[in-house]
Length: 466
Image 1 (spheres, one colour):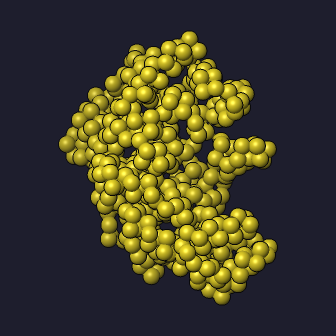
Image 2 (cartoon, one colour; image 1 turned 45 degrees about the horizontal axis):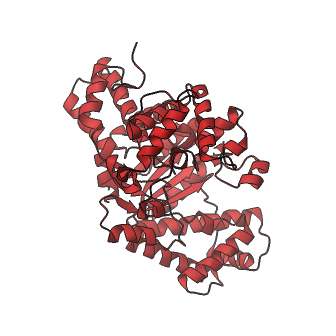
């Protein structure tokens, strides 16, 4: 019987162990997409306690606590940080086989050197141990990133952001590159006319222009795109239910925008046309600058109306959606490819039923210009766990080139989430180690090890050109 979370955790064969320890474990981390707040990095804060760095904003843990019968007061409510931590500690023993059980104890080990299992019996001791360490200089945010061998952090930023925190980090000469990503989803959200008009008004202020027609709107957004590029941005990102690729004319989009500014109700087809046009414009700009465009597809968000009213979005009420992805995705990519304006692209899938669809779709648009130009991105959100990662790796292996994958990303709001890279690397090495020991791959450790190193680090380094 193996010990829980030992040095060969998830590594079931000698070959897997060798691949991980010799070729994967020491590779730097390029976390090219996450939701870490850049202001906290710029200010180099020390969190006051483990609850603040670990539980604030972590809807993975919140969902588990709710499922375990924990009152909301101990999750997002007004209970003290210590009471919230104690409630989480009481939940952890019930998370067996949920990835949270692995992540919780992996993070306690990797950040604090704590190997004791978290439970009600150990909660007070662990809370005190973590809090003491968090006050030391080595647990300032900048040192945390460096201690985890992080080379690049890619944040997710609205076009309205002034990027002052990124600028400060650059001026300070901070060794970890913290780079913005352009996420203009609010700028195309015609489902909410009042919200979109408020956004346009804010854009007028930020860009110091007047916006009354679609050309002025696009010009202002393009200026923000240029500004992001000037500040080191090399990626865009979209979080959508599905790709929008409705046919439209420029005249139609001009008319729809006028209706938006006049606060008129749009027809469902007009909303689709507007979203489709905006998505196309963004993609063209990304190609012009040589950026990588990312699409996170398939989340059905804000399912619980009562919880949304009480707590707001991004508080743990989303799920996997069952949207039709193939036809519109093909149409969108094909339109860009036809004029040779398709940027390097990463598509992330949230519904495991669509894994093979996504893996084969990206293969339609590799053109030989860049190795791995079109990427079926790593498992994310609900699939960011052992089974989900393995299924994504297998689908990509069967339908494309696993060897050209640009590796893992945290997609996280937590500074404690970097061991997810380790988790992914261990699963990758175990998968390849099994194949070698089963005689399904040759016992060429050096070549397979090179592939492992590439997936863990070098593919991303070359692909993004950070």
